Image (cartoon, rainbow, N blue to C red; front, side, top):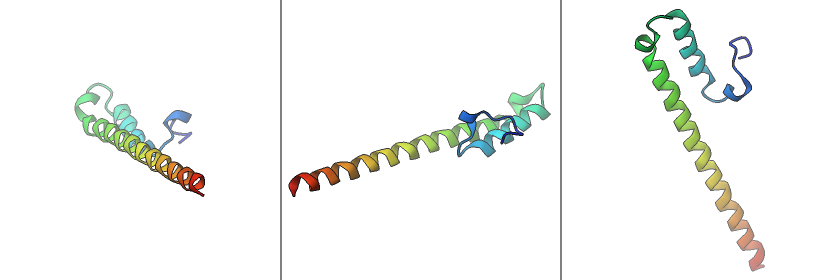
Amino acid sequence: MIAAGLGSRERDYCAPVLMAWRKCKAERTIFYPLFCLHFRHAYLECQTKDQILRMKEYERELRLMQKERAVATAE
């Protein structure tokens, strides 16, 4: 990922899709919006799914902590 030039904020679950998109943009410099649209769509979709997954994990952890607090106060 370092060789691909990805910054620290870009090294996440969607990094392979981002690298494919950047490679397509580099190969087709003039008309890349036309040829690389599916890579862009895949990257944005991956980012959306990753964000939703992170929100679900956060909410799950929050519910577990609330449940543990309720059990601790009940005892």
